[in-house]
Figure 1 (tube, rainbow, N blue to C red):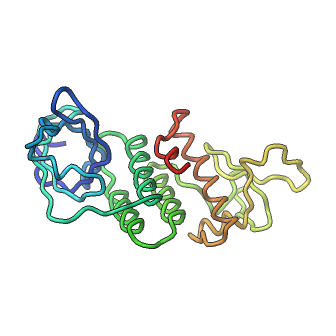
Figure 2: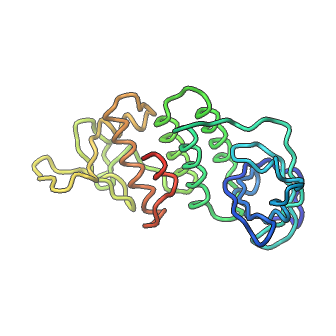
Figure 3: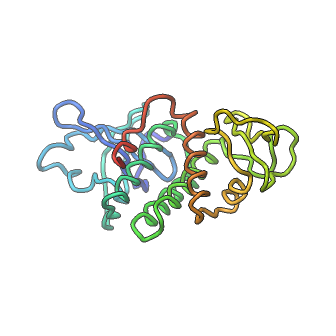
Amino acid sequence: MENRIYLQPAYMLHSMPFRNTSLLVDFFTLDYGLVRTVARGARREKSRYRFHLQLFQPVLISLAGRSELRNLTAVECNTIPIHLQGRRLFSGLYVNELLTRLLLNQEEHKELYHAYQDALLALQGKEEIEFVLRRFELRLLKELGYAFNLEHDCISQQPIEADQLYRFRPEMGFEPVPSAATVAEPTDIYPGAHLLALRAGEFQETETAKTAKRLLRQALKVHLGNRPLYSRTLFS
């Protein structure tokens, strides 16, 4: 990553106070992925950053420095922020938290950047929230190299079948459950028909939507660890 970056498209994901008047700010950028910065003096009343450092606000940022923690030198904006309220706001915060928790610092994710923009615009619109979140979670896992194989099972490499049950093994994939087996703990068991619907991007059916949510939560937990997501508590 260059010593100086000029006018890089970005969104602020998170900020927190730093020293007396500054902020630590995480940005998601087009060309450099997650970038952690120091916005010096940003908490002063007359700071030049004061009105541009907002969540869901598309901005252009300039940076200096070579360390893992960059200095924010300028923020420009010529559009209004994406406006989210209620559960849609909580959903946007959830997406932001996933990015800050799962992305490595200064690693490019251009496709994911565009997926993030699409998710914010969809949340601002009228599309069903659960559909937006499941679509983004799938894109995130794919970008990180953890995409599901929804074509074949992980044991025999046979195609996923609609009338078959499958156990999800995060490190392997979907393992067929023998029809005669007793499922003692069904939390990791999924109907093949729901997996095929997920592959097709079809979340309209209530039970399929529930399966997708449960499956993606299980898959993400492997990478998030045991520390809970703060944004999830907002929904309750």
